[in-house]
Image (cartoon, rainbow, N blue to C red; front, side, top):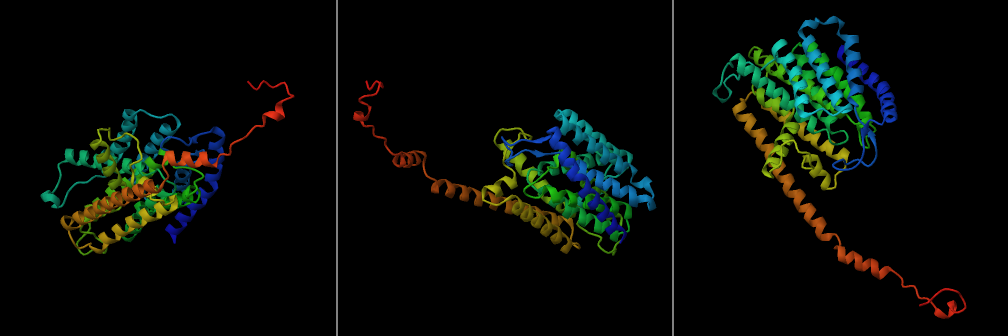
Length: 385
């Protein structure tokens, strides 16, 4: 009941704050204007992450009094720092180097100061305990990859929010069952905040998340996933919901952002472009070319992510050596099939579309010729020569 109240509190605060935020951002004209890679058709305010950030931290402030804060103080500090990195980037765009520097500071706060890191592979790939330097570096890379991978999928109404809700629900439920209530509370207050945000972000969106929201939410998820890996590996054998394929579940919780990032970067590099060059090669762009609407794409990709998570849960007694290749193969095959179907659909659409010359001929046939009777102008001053 306690955690349900924390979700409801965050949801209620978000419902109250977000309309005010939308009106305020419209007056300041802070948002996305149509054109270029943008797929919306009118001006939409961004920086919606402010709304669910306020909602989550308000709920946390109300309900966290009974928990000892030292174990999560630095997590909250890292989340706040990432929030201001995204906020600064939305107000005045940061250079990539400065943006990365801000993200690294948040990562260092989690990995080095809070000591939340991947300390062992437990035999995966034949690797056991990691030395501290490699542990810091590897965990930092994981946090940055998950954060920026999530940031990249925030390009469609309701998509990033849907992915976050599924992952936060799974993480919050798991932490609660294992008795890690402070981590469960972080998961649930953000769950309530994002649910309220989705009310206004669902198609047609009245507000976008912006980097303020996507970086904050991606970093929160990434931190909770690394914490899940560490806690899960430390549970005694036979504990309820202790998952043998720890890495596989961590990947499954962010399977779509990770796959989309890997896919986009590979395509861009193969075309001689930089990996961060913006384009329309994301999975959601391909699905929209097939005629699906924003909400249909969000639901479809959210359901696919949920199915992969449930698949890993069903294989909880098997090792990562078996489960990770299976879910990776599923993601690759689905992506390959998507490319095939999209190309076939686009070709069919092009064939059925009228050619430019044909459309010109049709237009010319429809034009009526105007005939002038010279006799009617005989006694007028108009020069007929």
